Image (cartoon, rainbow, N blue to C red; front, side):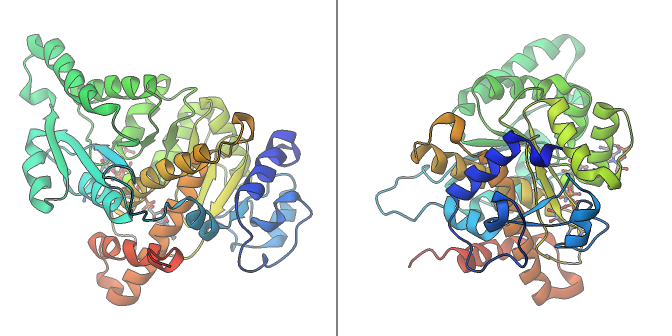
Length: 382
Ligand SMILES: NC(=O)C1=CN([C@@H]2O[C@H](COP(=O)(O)OP(=O)(O)OC[C@H]3O[C@@H](n4cnc5c(N)ncnc54)[C@H](OP(=O)(O)O)[C@@H]3O)[C@@H](O)[C@H]2O)[C@@H](O)CC1
Ligand SMILES: Nc1ncnc2c1ncn2[C@@H]1O[C@H](COP(=O)(O)OP(=O)(O)OP(=O)(O)O)[C@@H](O)[C@H]1O
Ligand SMILES: [Mg+2]
């Protein structure tokens, strides 16, 4: 039903007008305006091979469109213009990193830089800060978050307000923030991060919510409800928890596209990228997917690379769309474009890393190929 709605068709027409023609036509034709930029795929990406026209007929009205992700990357990636100054290619911040997890915020923040952002910050706990700094001198690390064990009960209110003041000083400078990689689940820390999210929302800062950030918002949906600048990137477990909480049912692969659309609509205005064999993206109006094969290695940390990359591409997509001065009602959702581009780049980098390192491929190997993957699609000098 949604696939034939006016809103859905308008989004596809807009995407079509935004993007250049793909280098080759899609493998099959489809009787809709989407034909040139989205190839119809399966309605249940985890159970059917990508591109199956049979599957798209099997679930009439709920086809998932394969994005022409390379065209999206080419279109939104800014040229390396010599007149630009530091910061114009993006300032990203990751809110995450605690005693247990130092890898996740590092992966997200360094990926943002390797994709092409100019500055990448990490706001984490004191315990995590020195460790993260020692991984890379490129990152700007703020050791300002606190966990319950380090704060007396009578100090909580003042510490919480001090943390917010400190982060707020920086917040409006960021083009996008990522909340959650390696954040942990300490209740005091999550309360402070809730305040940071509310502040980011008031300032209309795009916010990618991943990892423990999803744990936080699943238990406090008001933090993202009705926020068009929120991007949720759940993995299998995180998606299941979200569906159970919001839709009050279990994940149903038979109606996967409708369920994802409904989830976005119920939360209101958010964009969700459901990670898996294919990354399936919806803003409650359209459903697209990226199913380019990446790697059979499922080492932890790939979702963190993705969240950092999505943050950069989303800020680029916003700049691209705003600089094209399209009327507001005609603008394509930059969050969707950011997800499509981030997903493709991660998958390409994972594929190149696996080609080199096979079974020993780890997340840092994949990060090393982010640059080449982008270069292959969109050369720095041409
Ligand atoms: N190198 C690094 O530093 C990396 C760090 N990473 C970071 O790890 C964090 C968790 O992310 P994840 O992806 O492991 O969580 P997820 O898939 O929901 O859970 C899988 C299962 O584990 C359990 N569980 C998890 N966390 C729990 C907790 N704190 N306390 C209790 N249970 C917990 C969970 O059980 P459940 O909650 O369902 O009861 C589920 O069954 C997050 O911050 C992420 O960014 C990753 O990015 C990888 C690289
Ligand atoms: N079964 C799969 N087949 C192919 N690619 C997959 C599969 N599952 C996940 N991916 C890819 O790995 C990326 C990360 O997804 P994953 O589900 O591992 O996230 P995550 O659990 O949040 O990762 P992290 O360990 O960083 O927290 C996705 O963007 C997707 O491209
Ligand atoms: Mg994750």
